[in-house]
Amino acid sequence: MSDRTELSAFLKSRRARLRPEDVGLRDHGGARRVAGLRREELAGLAGVSIAHYTRLEQGKGDSVSDEVLNAVGTALRLDRDELAYLHRIARPPAPCAAAPSQVPPGLRYLLESFVMTPALVVGRHTQIVGWNRLAVAVFGDFPALPEERRTLSHLLFTEPYLRELHRAGWERAAREHVAHLRVLLGRYRGDQGLAAHLRHLRELSADFARMWAEHPVAQVRSRTYELHHPVVGALTLHGELVKLPDEPSCYGIDLFAAEPGSTSEQALRQLGNL
Image (cartoon, rainbow, N blue to C red; front, side, top):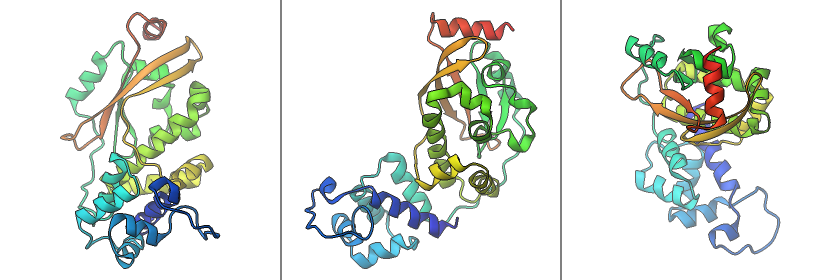
């Protein structure tokens, strides 16, 4: 998907989710050709001309000011992550240097020091480039996968083990992952590896293609997983993705912890002793 097409599709998806009554407008009846607000209604709410907004929705955002983008974002009721994404995809992509695939020694030592915390180092397109023993014990033998399939995306959308691990929570976890991938797309628009990863997943998984077409955008932050582990049973883990902005080889380190004194902490200790 080109930058222009992505900008157009994103704006249309956000306009489609709003009804006139959602934004204080009267619906005068009559059939609407498309769901949601009309372009002229959105332009009026944003305080821009219909011609100006139409050019933006056609993917021509190079000359649009930050003030106009903010006004459109407010009219569309974008949240913080969605507004940041709009600003990124409306501008020409900055050069994106290729990222090395090696995890620095210091980061590897840090991973190994987490004896009660499953930990993963993830790259720009969710490739798992580093891990500790406990992460493997919880999330399966992903190190045995071919390197090109050793990504969080592949684990969630193609590995039955992960789907069974999440069970009823799989849909939410998968949707959160797709939303995070769109944040990465906005941040690393020049990364050909990321673009190829997204094309591959849309072809590989109907579930991924369905979720991607909905244009979710959300930065991964704190989340809680209710897992069903084949060895220790119910396992509640709290996840935190810590970004590593100064390390070009990876995007962040994903850490998972159990509540102190809980049965889940006991389960992690049991897995760590296997």
